[in-house]
Length: 223
Image 1: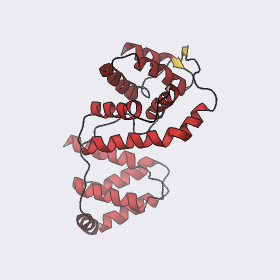
Image 2: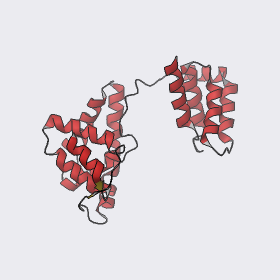
Image 3: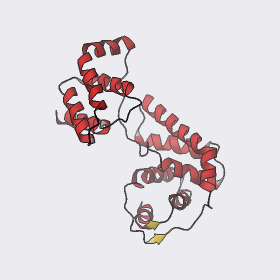
Image 4: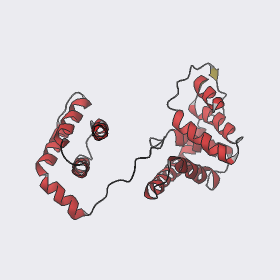
């Protein structure tokens, strides 16, 4: 992977032009190595800092990326989401996610021209769902059980909703109050209360939820 690391550590210019360089490199690999390198790019492109010592040449003309976005942006978005849903439902590995994503977007797809495929790579690495993390099987339950848990924890649900309505200056203030309200409850109850808060506050800014979920995970790992 040294050649990929080298370009990520030195490039400067536009991300779409970097993606052309990376795509060109990927297409020189054999099929198995290509998937490994594709996964590596997706996992490292936002993590490796560049010293910007090497300028990548322009590949896209002005306005081309916007045109491709209009044509294929939603298509690639749906491909990523479909692959993610399948991988979760079938409990596939991280590597299987990238193999399936590559085949879906680049092997059997509407993206047939080189610039369309380079755009596909650009749209993938820019997606919030990339890199992919294996999170296990999500919790699901019947509506009756969900309602029962909400009813049994009505006061906590109301308090969390209230916390989210307070215009606190820092997200850590919001997240710490929510975390305190969830502390001591079992994982299922925590999940239900958070789901209820998401539903009630869907039109508000979800202040602190990332920190809350992260803190809950750290709390479980300590046990």
